Image (cartoon, rainbow, N blue to C red; front, side, top):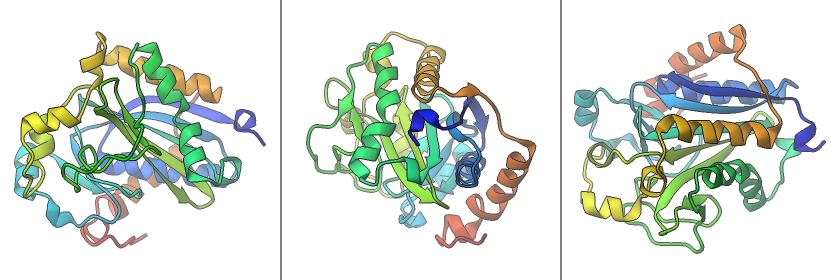
Length: 269
């Protein structure tokens, strides 16, 4: 079955705690694997949240800084580096579909699932592309400062990283989620780390933002991303079922906000 023949639902930008957003991605995967709709979803992290990559130790973070700033900490199912998702400057999305309907080759899968991102950037008149070649890390623990890879790192017209994207497979479904920088939160992005040698100027040299390349509001940027996801998938407007929301709240408590997962990388569910 082609992706266009699947039943898709579109869920527009919602503000929720980071642990709940990660739980909803996982619940959406279970829904898709069980024969329910595939999902395209745009979301916002409230309060601001640090998401660790799957294999990263938590001790890379300055937890005192996070606590003083009111920043939550969770851990993603996906690998890669740490991201600070603030409530304003970050726009996040996920695409969740049955694994059997996606290419087995990871590069092909990224190219397919990133199509709507490039459509959104084109709508905003941002000349974005996958980075042309691998580039060495500035600061390996941070997603936006680690080595750049042509498979999944999106850069702006001047070569600065604009979006990071990652995939994982969960119960016969694929989840691709990603972070797009609308506006940099440089001080916080660097401040979350216990020992970060990168200056604010170096961060700006490596990380681009939609506001660098386009004269648009955040609402306009979100609308472009939502429209592109909806058009790419042919999705109907939808929402989470009561059962999914209940399960996501429980999964957030039991896993994505649980020390066993966040610190110890062990799934307690």
